[in-house]
Picture 1: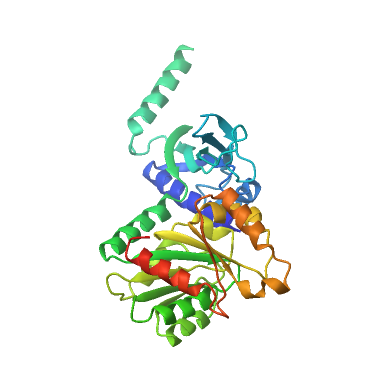
Picture 2: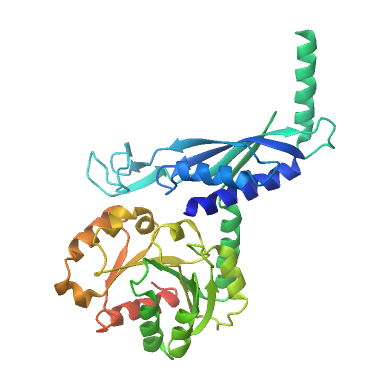
Length: 142
Length: 218
């Protein structure tokens, strides 16, 4: 059930960022979740959609999840291998002298938002406004 | 549609509070242990025995996490420990903001040892950094001996494993050697203590280690 608390943390983080950007709608949130992070992604998606439905800015937002495999590097033979069942033992030289290189990620990468057409410039909005302008120009010339 | 880069840990808000806690406790020279287990493994009993044994040697504080009741805090008070009870009202783990709040009520001396007794649960508490220096996972002989492979994240993120109720091993089908081997396969750096809070077996070794830990020499 910790997925509910994790989902709430995502909602809080993207909600804060959306307010800074004057977002009217969050369309999607892109995550990177490691195989060894202990997160059941179906539960996380369910919890996220449920919590998002209470917030008009987040309602309907899609959760995109990149799952990252649990991998380790052997300090003896330098090979990178898949860690099975959390046991970081090198399959080539049988040593435990290894370091985890991926699999514990629990990150928010980015989100896609809609903003008011005439909203005041948010943080970093110069690029956003420029993008909108250039898109408009392209469509005119195209 | 506009893309906004966020690039932060999902638990960044929790982790930042945890870092503040760790810093402020380090300034006060208080060493902190987050102790986790399934319900009924014997966390509170271990803390009772530990406080009794280290009375006069170490100032020990306990932040007691429970879903409901102050039963555990009363037990700690009864043996002379200083304690603050947190009731999570249904939440399955403690979070750093709860510890920050509890610390406002805990007036521990410099150089002391602070235990955070987490909610009985081998899954969720593994995710939340509480500002502790080390994590202790406790298992016991009256539960299944397959806990390390069933809850690997808990064992991977701990520095110490305690096997409690070791006195009952002759009467139960609990393979201590297998548990140690499986736990070490997941985390080869685990320091392991075999204890019984009923017969006091292993408690001297545990308490000696705690004293060196609290003095920063473990």
